[in-house]
Image (cartoon, rainbow, N blue to C red; front, top):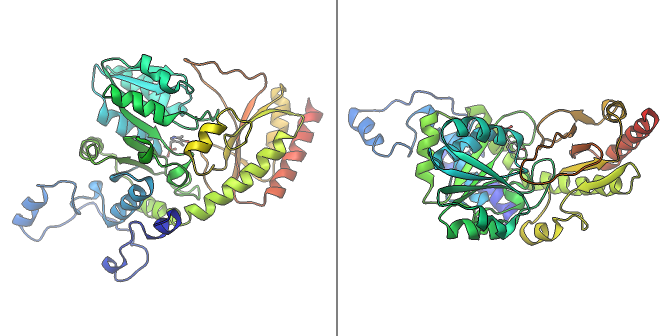
Length: 386
Ligand SMILES: *Cc1c(COP(=O)(O)O)cnc(C)c1O
C-alpha cells in the first residue's frame, strides 16, 4: 500500500463501530468486567484489550495502530504530549549509571530534562555535534545505552546521518531513539533507517490544527513491552478527545504536508533573495549543507525552517515581527496557520555562529503570495527601524 492509501486505512475498523468511518471518543476510566474470571484473565496481559482508561480505549488503540503503521514500527504508545513521549522513552530505556548521547541541536525542553531529571537520577548525558555522523563511534562508552537523534535539529535544522549513527550505536549495543517530529512519519521512515524508538510530538503535524497536546512513542517488537510498562508506570496517559483529534488530523496529513512543503519552499526561496537575509536554514534548498543527506534519506520537507538575518537591533526585529498580519507569534507549529518566533539557540558541544538574529518560520496553508507580501512589508518596517 502506498503512503497516502495507508494514511486513509491505518487503524480503521468500521465493522467494530457500527460501520462509522471514525471511532467515537471513548470516555472511560473504569472498565467493568462481567465476572471475576474475566477480571483475572485480563490481568494476565495487562496491556492487551480494554482494561482501564489509563492504558487506553478503542480510540487510543486505533490512533496507536495508525501511527505505528505510518512510522513503520511494531506498535505505538500514545502520551499526553510530545515531551512526555520523549521523557517516557528515555526513562524506559535508561537506569542509574547509564550514559546517554544527546544531539546538541535537540529540542530545548529535551535538553532541560536531561540536565535536570536524568542527572538527578544518576544518568549522565554527553552532547554531541549534530554533524558527527560515523564519528559518534569515538563517543560511545561501555555504559552508553541510548543515542538520541533529532533530524533536522530544532531551530538550526542540521540533517544527521542517521544510518551511520545507527550502525555505530548498534555495533556497541546501544539503542537509537529519534525525535521524528519535523518530517512526520510521511517524510522520514525511522525504522527503515534502523532506528529503535521513534517519537512524535503529534501536537504538531499529526493533530495539525493547533488545538490539542499529544505524543507518540513507536518501537520495534523487542522494545514495545519495556517502553509500554514504563510509560504505564508513570501514568502518562493521552486524553480521549486529544487521541481522537490526533487520529482525525492524521487522515489529512499527506495533503496538508505537501502544501506546507510547497508553500514553505516558495517563502524560503523568496527570503533567500532578500538583502536583509544572511542564510536560510532549510535542508530542502540545494545549497543547504544538509541537502545531500536530506535528499538521500527523506521523501519531503515540512513547512518549518529558520532564517538568519543580517545583524539588526532588537527594536528593528520587533518592528518586523510585531506588525505581521498573517504570522502568529507563539510556540509550537504544525497547524494550518503560519507562525514566527525568534530562536534562542543553545549549544554546548558544537559551534553555532550567527552574526544576526535567527527567526523560525512555520508556513501554514495560507496562499504563499499573501505570506510573502506580509513579510515584504515587515522587512520594510525593519529597515526603517534600523
Ligand atoms: C514541540 C516539540 C516537542 C514537544 O511536543 P509537545 O507536544 O509540545 O510536548 C518535541 N520535539 C520537537 C522537535 C518539537 O518541536
